[in-house]
Length: 254
Image (cartoon, rainbow, N blue to C red; front, side, top):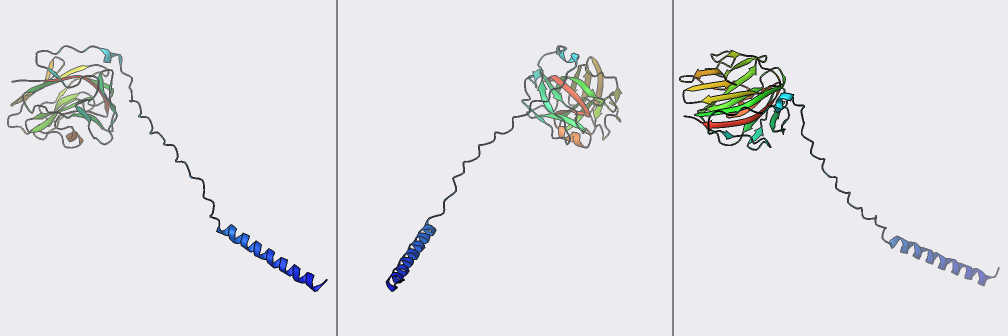
């Protein structure tokens, strides 16, 4: 092989090396490909609100209410919603909702209740409502009301299902003081409960029977210490019992 040919081959090889190096450098200089822009994930709609916890009402729930005697009664429940009321924050409370024109308190562990949120008289008034025990065996109406600067509770169907009385008088609850009475209550039946609070007396009726008649002069009026204090100054509660209420009304009295 001639010397000229060898020199030409070396020249060509060197040129090829330069071209290859230039190509590699050009390739390395190219920007790295960017990943495709990610599309935002579609928003997940919030879960739909759960339906009200309907309960099976007994046939007696449809019985029309008795008329209110006297004049001046003002409604506190319109039958359509809980306007003016809020759920009492009892630990272990059950569901509260409106159903078929009624307020339903589902069974709690132990309490379920509601509080009135608007103005209400402190004395010289009369309050009435229809109450029904739906299930359970204890009080289906714990009606806590203001008495001047204090409050007390009318307990209906407590201590095993039959006790009626005021909690508390002179520190003694409804099972211990002179307001204590016992009567039987049927589940699935409406009872008209009426309470009158005046400056010197608390009076209470269930249907037509007067079961509470106590003087408050010189007495210490209070609620029983414990969870029921959350019902103050005006509220309704049930204890380990489901209950229904309707026709909640009040009027002022002399």
